[in-house]
Image (cartoon, rainbow, N blue to C red; front, top):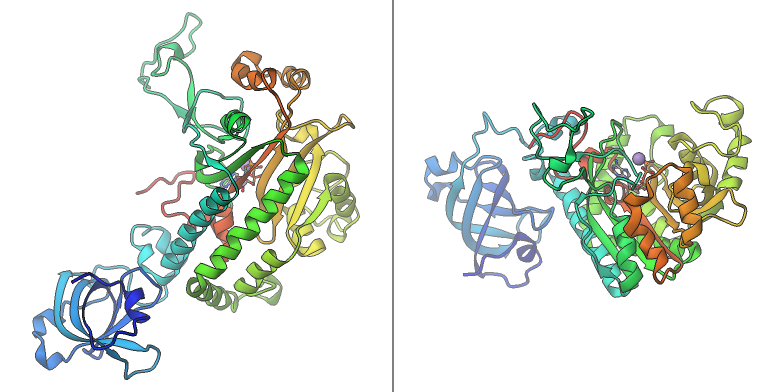
Length: 477
Ligand code: ATP
Ligand code: MN
């Protein structure tokens, strides 16, 4: 007999069939009703046991968390809340869960408590819903790119280029930490290291993706990236997944169009395919926010918020316009910003980004044409000589979700920039080759996958949307 999933059984029209199902006990009420879940859906199937016909010692082991094999008949449900249930004829306890020890009991646990039990928290409705949404979003991303003519490109995880400049890196080495080989002037001699040079975990696959875009046209990477930034925020991880499309012959406008269409498409896909889980997460959030003052509650329930993003244009604003808005806004004049906006050229902090998105525009915003001085070396210089073709997408409640740009394709301009920033040209020899041989306009962006999952699930902390979060002082599991 094929093992049916609970999701299949709950929508089955084929009553009175003999079925076998395996799953974990969520609750066992009145020595009669087992709510069984197998992860295929948020919902449980009710399994009814006539306790008179079962061994008491076996029923004693039917505790929350225990794994069961149940055989029985699928019947129309007598109770409310479900259409079908299982009349149990045989029950086997596959694995017990001692209620004295098992921490995931059917009561409310705090997210902080569950973070310490990351290996078991996935057994709660909240985390199972989040991770199904996460999985669906990942699929939607691959699907979107495949349908739009992109090739999936695997960027290396260990990188020998240290000029990416996107953040602090984690060193990869096999040298003996206690007595590493030294050079004549006493520095660590990386020539004797595994790769014969300094290597790190990648902070971004962009530079390599550019090489591939300049042959395959449209490519994307979707993989783990690592940043040793010591920022303990609810938006930063030391290991996170990034989606990085890179397109030949795209200028910044085409890049922004693609980014907007892409985000709308994957959210829309998730709205269609994760309805139950999103409804659950929406109610979880409403419940959580009940105890908060009105001003701190979300402006819209989760699903409405997601539909709003799908149905409305993102507002496109130049950095220069944004600075004008910020300079003249109330919180700036009243000195309520931690970093007051005084002049053109300052980098925007998340308090400014959030003001623009949540207070001023009330919708997702794309900021573009940033001052060259606050952006990376590879971004294309505008005619004004002081701004670059960069864009960031800012989301309500999240801040920056995407960072991208049109890349500098002119060899001489790029070389000039590299010199200005005191980067060793030799380090970038292969990257410069891309401008020497068949150079062309091209663009791309990076989307932090966990920030997208945060937005889609309405969760508040990035540690709760990745299975086993890596953050400063924490690499348990
Ligand atoms: P932030 O200013 O928020 O630190 P960033 O400017 O360093 O971001 P980029 O280098 O442009 O970000 O990276 C592209 C995207 O990757 C960001 O828009 C964001 O969504 C995501 N991202 C960046 N750093 C992290 C991190 N430490 N953890 C999770 N996501 C991140
Ligand atoms: Mn950062």
